[in-house]
Image (cartoon, rainbow, N blue to C red; front, side, top):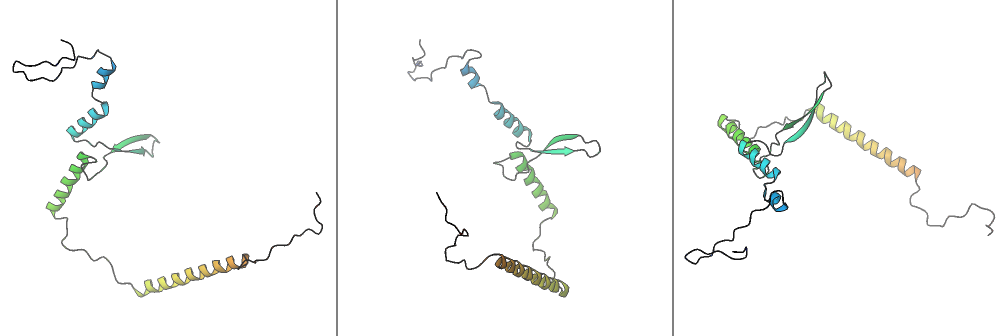
Length: 161
């Protein structure tokens, strides 16, 4: 039987053609192997490890030794990193159980005191005076509006060719 023949069962139903085994070391054999990145991502997801770690350089101030450490990415969506998203969800669930959430918003603003209002007015006046000084300086160095007449030549004698 050749590779183009489709084998049939005794009931007459066609079976899928069986691919011939690829020679060891051939391109086809290498293409059938799983990719290393895919295998590493699968292993990381299986063990609950971050798949997108952030690399940070840590310098020991006493010895001057430098090392690179990886910290979890901290993603909250499972599309980006399932391990970090699961960890964030468990943390938020625990915080809610412990009562870290509030039913009302805290009021954190205090009313403006007289001293603060006076400082704001003084700063606004200083900013206004500075802008006016810059504008005066710009007007003194340039002529406004520009003249429409053509400039005259400063040479007294015409040029000879």
